[in-house]
Amino acid sequence: MTTRRTACRRIRSAAAAVAFGVGVGACSAPGDGGTDRDTKAAESVVIGVGSEPDTLSPLLGYGKDGNSKIFDGLLARDTDLKLKPALATALPDIADGGRTYTYTLRDGVKFSDGEPLTAQDVVYTYRTVLDAKTNNTARSELDAIEDVRADGDDTVVFRLKYPYAAFAARTVLPIVPEHVAGEQDPNTGDFNTKPVGTGPYVLTNWSKGEKLTFKANPHYWGGKPAVKSFTMAVIADDNVRATRLRSGDLDGAVLPPNLAATFAKDDGRRTYEARSYDFRAVTLPTAGEVTGDRAIRRALDAAVDRQAMVDKILDGAGRPAYGPLPVDDPWYRRSVERPHDLAKAGRILDEAGWKPGAGGVRAKDGQRASFTLYYPSGDKVRQDHALAYASDAKKAGIEVKVEGATWEVIEPRMGRDAVLAGFGSVGDPDFGLYTLLHSSLAGDGFNNMAHYDNPVVDEALDTGRRSQDPKRRAAAYEEIQQALVDDPGYTFLTHIDHLYVLADRWDGLTTQLEPHEHGFASGPWWNIEDWQPKR
Image 1 (cartoon, helix red, strand yellow):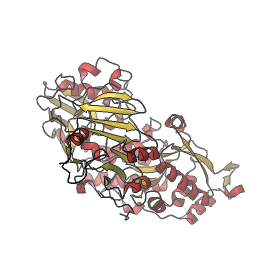
Image 2 (spheres, helix red, strand yellow):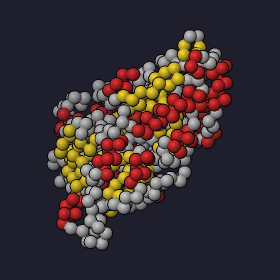
Image 3 (cartoon, one colour):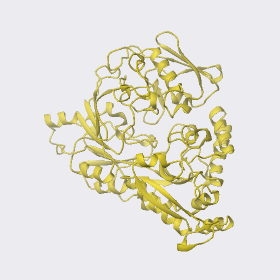
Image 4 (cartoon, one colour):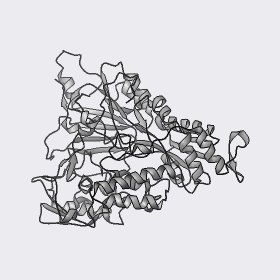
């Protein structure tokens, strides 16, 4: 990885994660032994994050990849992302050629309202998520399930339509109580904002757009957390988040590289870097008069200077993205790497009939090579990516008009306007690629935002999902990566390493290899229930 100018202590991979500490800014001086005030302060943590979930109900997609502090799944992931038992006593018993998965539940687990967990709660959770009437846009991730049933109070049996190599990893899905959620409409019930789960914490208050507060769950099966309460302060603007951290209003925050660097010489705080699958890309909707032209998309892919974005925008905390899989992923194929090549971009456009026009903007049949690119306001990293992308595009004769807006403004426009988007899932290539690219999911919420439609890619995605043969799967994902070079629906820019700045007050922190969804569920606080005060 490129050496960074910030003097942070770096975590280069999940396997290299080490223990650090965090807490409030007003910590005791080294060697003074601490005080009762320090101890009490250490029981509560305030974290600054850039966004909040739309819902806290797993029935609508919350926590589907694990790390929810309110809920648990049958399985969970450790620091190195290896699956481990959670509500289940062990990893599943797999039979019938990979079509039957059986889980035995842990004894004595209770929900935060004191009611016991049963196998029927698991059945209810999965069946409700799979119900077409439930507004869960991640339903396709559980497509392999044919049926789920309870065998007594402590055994759950899944029957699959086809062997799905990655199925066990999908059972990190949080389990909800049927006796509460089952009495409500899953789409509109107050369970979405007043959840009940088996996790280490319970939600005590949610002020939308401001903060979420949590306290330790007295019924938690895993023991009493030393951190008795924590708050997630929702601060969309990166600069405001950094300012509040510096003032001591926050104990920790997720920050972009340029702002994290300003804390490098602060002895009271530490900076952590977690590797991720999180990538930034420009969606190029097929419905757009300009973005729908394959030559435009290929030219943009050639014109963009990915390495410059890593160096100048990310300060080296990331890697060029030549597709949705990062360059160090075992499924990645180096054959798809291509250089920044403005001359090639020009040739592509010339051959397709996009000729130089007024103001340096190319045109074809009276249509100027011009389109709008939106990014979410307050996100400095995305703004910088968008501006750099527009600058590169201009050199090729394509005008990209960059606009910042709220998601409320952006979402209705995603089908026709380009967006500086972020995606990326860990665990298996199926997890991120299927929802990003499969034509059946075009326009389904944030799934397939570019409305990408390539029959070859669809077939390869289905093969990768349904095959258990590692070689066949590898061939399918290699075919997908190559197809995205020949027929790009997105311009992939960078894979980002996530940066967190935290006050030094706790032991037991680690980071994981992270997905796009970070800050709220991921980060050094992914295992906050395991933290211990520094002595």
